[in-house]
Length: 531
Ligand SMILES: NC(=O)c1ccc[n+]([C@@H]2O[C@H](COP(=O)([O-])OP(=O)(O)OC[C@H]3O[C@@H](n4cnc5c(N)ncnc54)[C@H](O)[C@@H]3O)[C@@H](O)[C@H]2O)c1
Image 1 (cartoon, rainbow, N blue to C red):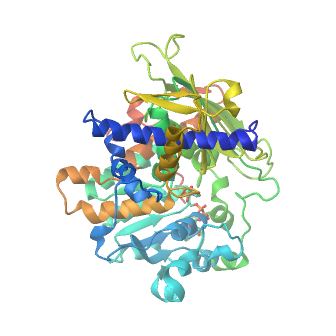
Image 2 (image 1 turned 90 degrees about the vertical axis):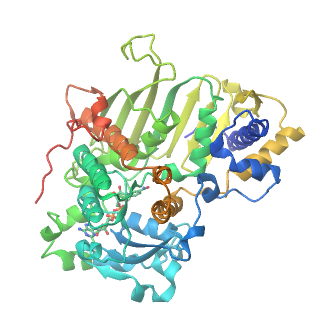
Image 3 (image 1 turned 120 degrees about the vertical axis):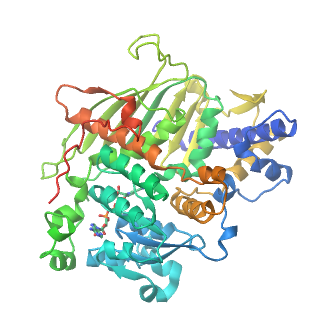
């Protein structure tokens, strides 16, 4: 993102964002103190700012959870799928909230790898393995089940964390909830939309919590970026540009090597585990029966973020193209995709057609390509008064409206709770204070991507929901539950439908698709091909 910005301009953008976050927090405090309301979701900051705190705000304080009622009894968990993402979740989890006591995987190489601290090879790796958290006894204490159904029968396990290939998400999540377990299932929620709706139904029937791993819902950076957007400081938003570009031409990350020990161990019984071949198991992202391409793997995260920035709206329509534009191998999914989503704007008039030139539309363009990572990934929200860029889940930058203001310090004037961007001096004491408050409010740097917090928050909900009142039970829900993730899956899979439909490149979303109680689904991935 932000290709044309110099490092100095990026630094100005980061400071702009920090100051405006600080201004918004202070405005809330003043409003609350004057008794004229204020934004309750940031009320914790009142005390923080009043006390002149300098320690970074924790995600637990920001999102309003703690493990104080756990009485040293973390939620007992089992991991199903100990591959790349399973390793990230293990590495990032906090054992004071969640204690892994079992795991399941069918690949011998990953059964071993999940214990290993990979920072020995790559100091920045989030995969720190069971050993990091549980010490040298981990291998003795954390039980392996090759058959995940046996793990589900373990009565001690309260929470099942699913990091399996996409085609298995619904099946395993449903079996887990029927076995009495709460579930964190990785994104995309499921391979098709009927399965997503079934997962929501089963969660309701079994009274289990179902959380889906779109981790941006637990990122402090995204939460504050969203507060800036919702404050109106960017003016009217009409365009978001989002992208995730990779260059897989040297080492294709979707075609990992097949380890000899996995080939040997699984050769005879691969179909028993639901795969046609060892290639399909290890390279599941390349095939339509087991994966759903770039929109499921990457685009779903970012369209999830865009829909939050746009007030959790569902899109009106999507137009998309893509193809196997580089790889001439046996893969079935596109290696380049380009989408245009039309979302309702703030002044969208539902009595008018979305095609009416006077209607208020926000256009989100999204691309994901596999041959050039020059821009990498992020989202750029373009308003009539300002631009906000969130880059690689790590940095947010804020700029004023005109091109010249890329190099300009902007601050916010908050009057009557409504902030506007201006270009007053960043050196006056009020602005310096705003920068300090902003830094405190934004929490630790670099920011957590949210994996740790999604598990912490789910554990908090699990531990507290049975003790409280009905209103507590409604509050004690994952921030990305079934309904939100259903919408994310519809948004991603319908783009695939547009890409693969030779004539109908623009598809209009139907409201019933988003309603878990209604059977209507987009006509994509309707035929489940089992072995
Ligand atoms: N939230 C994120 O940022 C993020 C990032 C990467 C991946 N993911 C998601 O995580 C999931 C897993 O992706 P990954 O990259 O870890 O894939 P992976 O192939 O590295 O890991 C999948 C693991 O599941 C195991 N497995 C397959 N079938 C099994 C079965 N029947 N029983 C037990 N184990 C089985 C495999 O052996 C493998 O170890 C996917 O849904 C992916 O979209 C999410």
